[in-house]
Length: 89
Image 1 (cartoon, helix red, strand yellow):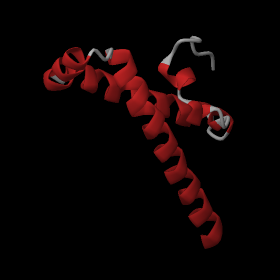
Image 2 (cartoon, one colour; image 1 turned 120 degrees about the vertical axis):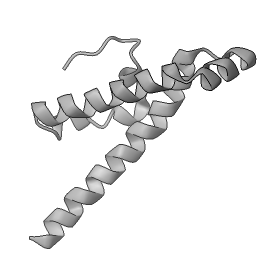
Image 3 (cartoon, one colour; image 1 turned 45 degrees about the vertical axis):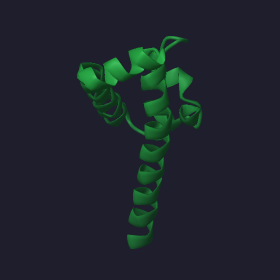
């Protein structure tokens, strides 16, 4: 998987854990597709866009902040599920 150097995915330090190696191609594609859908929805939120403009925050920075936290929390949830699956075996 190749992401642009300035992409949101590459700017989220929480993704430096090589999670792409922990998922198969279909799982990772679905994972990224879900993040794209979230980004598109956030960009349509007129109140959020207006707030960012008023505060002088770019929407790229808004998305980076959101996904930094979201990628980390999502990864923790996946890790916990895998641990539970292993405990159940």
